Length: 387
Picture (cartoon, one colour):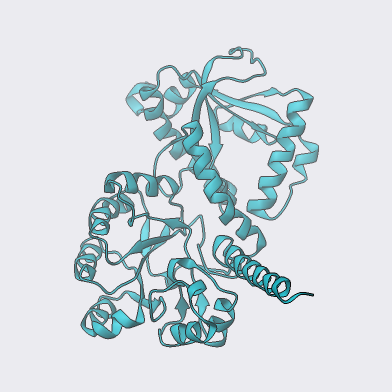
C-alpha cells in the first residue's frame, strides 16, 4: 500500500475511534452515572467549572432554600481559590472532579489527559463538556473514578432569558434528575433565583449526587439518553403542553383535531388533546403511585381545560384501557391496522423503559381511551364545583 494511502487510512481509523468513543461515552453515556430513581422526588443540582467569583452567591442561594448540591471543580481553579473550596465543603456540598484544566479530552494527548484526570481529586469525574477520548473511561477507571454525566442541561451558558431557561428545565425535570449548571456565568444566579423556589413548591428535593440512587447506564438507558433530544424536538414541533410541574405529574397534552376512529360522542375532527405519558416516570412507579399521580395530574388538567375551552376531550391509545375506567375514562375499539401500530409502539416503549414486554400486549386488545372535559371538571375540579 502506498504511504499516502496508508497514512490516510490510519487518520480515518483514528478519527472513527475517537468519534465512537464520544458517541458511546457522552451521547449515550454508557457506563456513566446520569440519573437516579424516577419515582423519587430527590434531584441533584450540579455545578461545573468552579470555583469562581459567583461561588459565594450560589452558596447563599442554596442555603436560603435549604438545598444541597454537587460541585465539579476544575483543579487549576481550585488551587487558585482554596478558600472557596473550603466554603463549599463547609456548607455540606459534595466536591468532585472536573479535570485539572478545562480542556476537551479530544484536544489532549493521552499522557496529558492522564495528568488532567489524576490531578483533579474526587470519586466522580465529569469530563469538560462531557467530551470523551478513547482513553477517558480507561484512565478514570485506573485512577479509581466513576464518570458522572447528567440528564438535564440548564443551558445557562446560552444568551437566553433566565425565565425561558427555567421554564424549559421545569418541563423536562424528573425525579432523580442530575441537572447540569455552571459556576461562573452571571446568568446562573438569576436562573437559581427563579428555579429554587419552583423546585421546593413542586415537591422536588435538591440533594447531593451521592444521596441519589445512581446506577451506571446500560444499553437501554443509553438509548433513553439518546431519545431525549428527539423528545424535546418533537415537543417543540407539536406544541406539547406540560400538565403540572409536580415531581409525580405524568401527562403532556397535544391539542389537535381528533384523528379517529369515530367515537360514539365525538366524530373525527373534534378539537381534543392527545395524551403523551411521561414514560420514564411512570415506568418507575408502582400501580398505586400511578393511580395517585393520575388523580393529582387531573387536578392540574382542570386548569388546562379552563385555559383551552375548545378542547372537548382527552384521548390516547392503550392495550390496558380497562384499568383507566376507574379514573373516568371510556374505551372504544380501534381498527386492526391501528391496533398493530399501537402494539408495536407500546412494545418498543415497554422494552425501552421497563426492559420487558407485558403479556397483556398480546392478550388484550388495543383501544382508544378517552375522557370528556365535563367528566374531568366534575370529578377533579374544585370541591365547590362538584356540588
